[in-house]
Amino acid sequence: MASNNSYPKLHNATWPGVVGKGAPDSEPIIPLDTLLKLTAGAEAGGQKFDGVDLWLADPHISIDSSPDDIKRVSDHIASFGLEVGSFVAPIWGGAGGGSAMGDADEVKRFLTQVKKACQIGQWMREIGIRPSGGIRVDSSTGVEAWDQDPEGNTRKIAATFREAGRIAQAHGEFIVAEGEICWGGMHSWRENLKLLEMVGMPGVVGYQADMAHSMLFVLGANAEKDRILPPDFDWADKPALDAAYRQVADALRPWTLDFHVAQNDGTTFGSGDHEKTGRHCQVDDPNGRLDVVKHAGYWLRDEKGELTKTMRHICWDGCMFPNAVMESQETWNRILGQMVQVRDAHGWRE
Image (cartoon, rainbow, N blue to C red; front, side):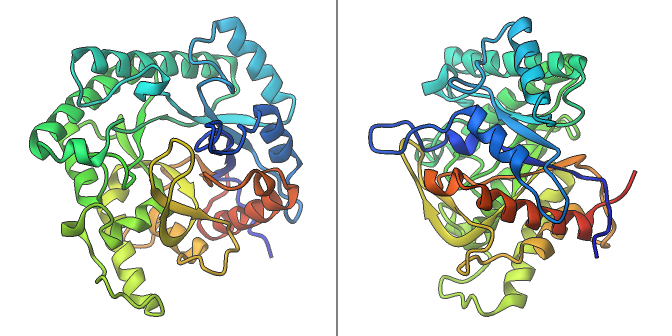
């Protein structure tokens, strides 16, 4: 029987229609409208998605949008019965940004993209369509480049993130940094913790926990020294996986301001121009290593098992799936059903 919890709100991500797509050797980008229709059309036990998290780059929503542009797109999203949550800011060099540990020009471009995203966020809050969510960033640099000077480069990234936090504060926003094994200085759970502590702006610059990406940290992918589980780990040993994953969550949960429900099979994958990172699996994939509902609780409840209520909404993230999977309504019905179970188990009512 459903719990009838009303929080956290349940959002779908739109960037899986873009990430890993559009390159000559990959599938076409999925239009924003297609994703909005699929999100609005999803249903599970009488429940619907409450909103979407957005990709602020062409061809979805331009980072250079005007106030009138944002009013039009907000009205359009609202016509589907959806609200807006977190944004992905296009801070990478290929999207007009630059490395967070780069030279002065690169850092300036990075921060300019953050400022544009924060301004759009402020406009949407004023419109009333965006009651929750932060601005998502990463270090916009690879592990190999970072590894040339780990201490110095982490200090540079922290300085850039600190300035991004100040920009966010000025717009009533906050920054969420998503650690993945492909981002230099954010490629292990210890490096993420070190970076966030160095930034030193809790509540303003925090962590965006993706269940799939964070799970790869226990394997020490791209960071052998921070491996928790042994190389010959037996996936049948569920208690050991639980303990390792809880160690990661306990370290990063105090910094977590945004949360992605996801599944992972313990492998890496890349598509198009996206480097290999933790593979997202379909929510019902028999090879999935996570107990999605149980392990979501590691992020949504504290070490005593009490609800943190930090995240007013949670989002499904599933990048680099084939378009045939992404464009099937049944895919989103199943995902929504799993997210409803997460909210039933770890949500609350207001």
